[in-house]
Amino acid sequence: MSQKLLLVEDDATTADYIVKGLVEEGFTVDRADNGRDGLFLATEAAHDAIILDRMLPGMDGMAVLAALRAAGIETPVIILSALATADERVKGLTGGSDDYLAKPFAFAELLARLRIILRRGGGGQAPETRLSCADLEVDLLSRKVKRGARTIDLQPREFRLLDYLLRHQGEVVTRTMLLEGVWDYHFDPGTNVIDVHISRLRRKIDEEGERPLIHTVRGAGYRLSEQG
Image (cartoon, rainbow, N blue to C red):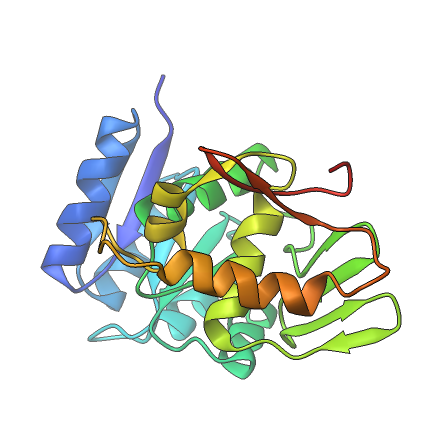
């Protein structure tokens, strides 16, 4: 029996894109295009998870979430939002969501995050707020990066690149994966943008005398690992 999801998203193009991908992955999807209808569906039927846009007509996504939690409905919720600052992410997570994904996003990332909260079996666990590899630590909420006692300042794209590498720690990450997951490109722009950003990130993460964490896999891509 397929898992049943509720998508509350007012942008028809985005909703069509998400629903198509989820159905292809075997999910059953209920759909609402405003907050009030979304709240009605969420309270009237059981769902395994809810994907909730934050800025909705009729009733704001945060108000929908608050109403669900006040009613004792603990269905896992992923918020989708163009509001991507640390303050807004904190507001979403402390408001009762299980995850928070900023727009624009790659469908593959939404699917991965959805599967994580489904595996948790209905909430109750703290959302992932920190990532690490050896002595490298990233606080996803404050967006602070440290290696040992050393604080590392990253540009927004560099932070997103490091976030992606950490979430695929130990795996070979191809250029295609990086273009989609970090740059939201679904085509090859034919530039050296990845090489430039990897080079900058590597200089900041792996200083002289430290064990290298970012590795080039010749002919394949890159891997973040303490194993080399």
